[in-house]
Image 1 (cartoon, helix red, strand yellow):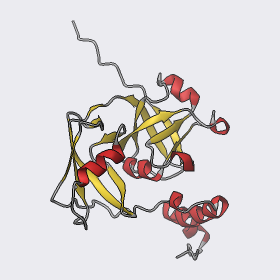
Image 2 (cartoon, one colour; image 1 turned 135 degrees about the vertical axis):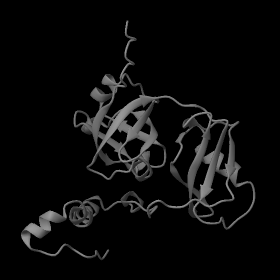
Image 3 (cartoon, rainbow, N blue to C red; image 1 turned 60 degrees about the vertical axis):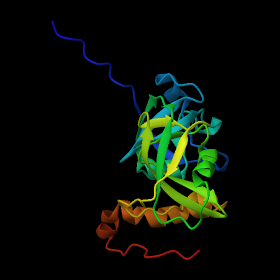
Length: 224
């Protein structure tokens, strides 16, 4: 007698859109209400978001004007950690996180200050989900410090709590690929202008064959 096959995890494919300003930096993903129903999600549940990489976010209902469009609104940090750009598709599934007993974070460059930096980081990440491999940006002294989540205990996806030990590694992390910490969302306002800039910059990168077919040179720069 054959054993029953494991239950397949439910997942959806959703198109990525930019987060609204109010949601940036809060680990929030706004998901279509039909998608929330299919995945049996309630506001505040956790979802795993997978593009070229995987990360985790807190799900919230969509904005009224977005509902029914099959999109997921996520900020630049979540997009980077899932390895996608606006307009691409991600796979979304329900997940859970255990309370973190310990997380280890590695800076990409030696830190320019001393002190209990782990405590500062914990206060910034309190009650937020973290996935192993994530890159997070912590604001300190007017600057954003990038840190890679090199390990998490007791599981790959955890929730940071008051009792979580946050250790800052003395060994710097290596970038697999050069990723800028700056996103379009860091430029406040100018929505229409940013949309045109996005088209100018991303179209030749994603579809160079269009320019070759037309026999024209793609734009080489943008002056703001």
